Image (cartoon, rainbow, N blue to C red):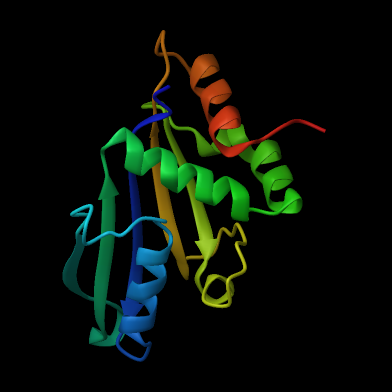
Length: 152
């Protein structure tokens, strides 16, 4: 079953952070051999506040097999408390184009803690939800199923 049309995971690495560690954690979010699967990490250079250099890293997943592996991995690693937060906030996380957004705290994720945050220091996840017929109600059900979100 198709869960999503595509997934984009991105993160910013500031010049005073260890970009290699941040990139490695980005790769670890996709539980596949990304080289063998030909999943590329796209990198862009940007300038932040006070002319500080930032590297923007992004992985895009378009194949169903890749998307499903990522969503299953995320579902397994999000704790019940975090899933509860997503349930409570699900309406505000789904936009009019049926993209579901979430952020994982970067510092906690570097310690293998999957913690949903509103902070900007995070790994950004955008899930383009697949639903048929394509409407908000069906998209919400698809997100709940894909991430194992169940109302208390």
